[in-house]
Structure formats: structure tokens, C-alpha cells
Length: 83
Image 1 (cartoon, one colour):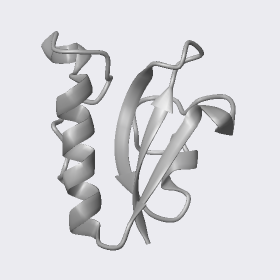
Image 2 (image 1 turned 60 degrees about the vertical axis):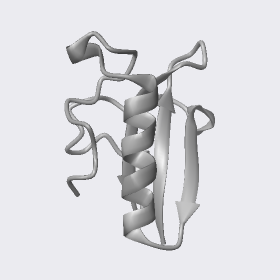
Image 3 (image 1 turned 90 degrees about the vertical axis):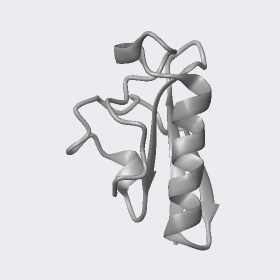
Image 4 (image 1 turned 90 degrees about the horizontal axis):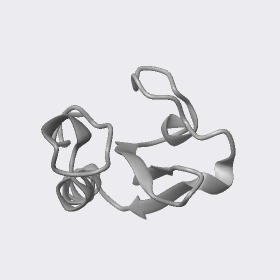
């Protein structure tokens, strides 16, 4: 199973979007960004294929925008879909 996930700030706004499987959404390892302190600030959406999860990840990053590009609120440093 593959999924996308959003990490939310305390005010409910997203600050990171990712694609994963297993425990990826629940660990800070290799993100460069710390996960939320509580699991209730992590939103997970499951997909049947990795390709579909990558499409959704890229959509979320495009929709919410990136802080480093001054286009939005996410701390992602890429447009997603890299794996």
C-alpha cells in the first residue's frame, strides 16, 4: 500500500506533503523537517499504486505551494514525485 500524507501545524495548515509506505509518514528520518508532535496532525490518504500516490503528492505540493519558492506554505524542497 502506498499513500500521501500531510503534516499539519497546530493551526491546521499543512507544512509538508509526502508520499510513502509503511511508517514513512510517522518518522522525521530523511525529511529535513520534523514530524508533528501528535499523530492527529498527520493526514494519510491511501492509493492502490505508487504512481497514483506520486500524482497526489505532486498535486498537494503544487496546490499548497512551497516556502522556498515563495509560492505557498509547504517546507518541501522539491515538486514531488522523485521517490
